[in-house]
Image (cartoon, rainbow, N blue to C red):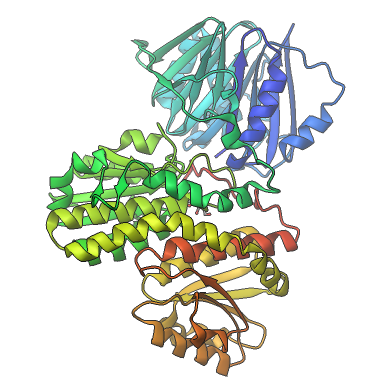
Length: 611
Ligand code: F6R
């Protein structure tokens, strides 16, 4: 969490930093701050979103060609002006921003308190900054050397950017466990938690590795490890255009991203699926086909929405490949003592590729000899790089904090992998394999067709915006969809929602049902359809309000439900790629109707780079 931006060159730094921070607000928006050097160090910071700082700074002299900026997701200390970054050292000469958590900050703080230091904030960042300055003072060494010594004492995760008033032509940066990208311009450099702040200036970037320090000047980038040995910067070409991170006429990023799904699903299939030829081309899978085919067990690790995609993958892989699958919350997996045997394959699923729990879970599994297969959206991200092999989801930048298009792209990739492995294992009949390839190929068009009726969900959303709670139910492949629908509603509208397997409802949750409770059934046609119709009757008998996502033409539910939304018919394996879309829209419209900030829901951040 937290977004960091830096600039050094000959342009005005402030506009670049503020624009970069706005693009990185998905990483947190509890407070914002900038530090600039122009005849001395100036620090401005404020609780709240970037726009609030921008307004506060109107009319101030912000001219400088070197600066750093931060948008915060609070960990140590409440959101407030004084806990906002950048922090200044005791001498006032150094300014620092930080993304991550210094786990042993208490110990370091105690050492500094014993030496008479006092602190202006409750943050771990201010402690680390003063610790660095104390080392510099004590050892009479350069800032770079002091930083190196300090970081050897630090446990936890960090990306830090440091400005030194006495050395105004340099930004010093360091990374461990949180992302840092450096954009290379002509006699200028850009720094960011991702590449979005630099997209209009350069397409050449360096992804800094863990335990590296970058000494960045306008015309020079030096990378070193903590042992002071030079590292060669590896330059990567970006293929993201500016338009991809703008709203493109939509009111919110979330709505834009929901509507992008026909295109993103198509992009995910493009060049991979050829239904007529009966082929799926995925080099990451092909190069590891024996490992995947012979896996004794597949363990999927992920968090949140990506975990829901993993749950669906469990159903799909077990059915098509007959390989046992376990799905684990990455945060649990990393702290228990999981049994990983030879021949187990770990699939890590992550939109951002930076989720700390997922990253550490795969590092842990790697130590035990597991093969890691990454399903990641952000190219070059930490999880992508930590995986032995993988497949990108190609959904493009997802800016809305609630994940939408990344989820459907994850399902597409996971289904293609399952089909490819099943074909290789001969655990699927040629007829079913071919049918599913065509079914997959039809999803973009079907998603486009259902999105044309989005207004129907706006009307339904208006009806239920006053609900205090909601229940989401589904069976089989529709159960993870119900979980995802409930998560979306919670995040976006702050309405308490629970997802359950429909049949499990009578073992407890049915007690919640009264004439006010909306119960959302994901009830598209599948092998259990009659059963879910009975479950709907059970809710209606108790006067619950039923909203049903059904298959077009299914009359059996229309007469029973209070509200229905029909999706085009599809095989039950690919149907979740469609049935989740109305649930995304329903949450969106309810959130908007309630006046919530749907792109930046309270307390959340898009990239969860802390535990
Ligand atoms: C929900 C959401 C989160 C993420 C979770 C994992 O809308 O966005 O639950 O799915 O934080 O993030 P990634 O996929 O980036 O690892």
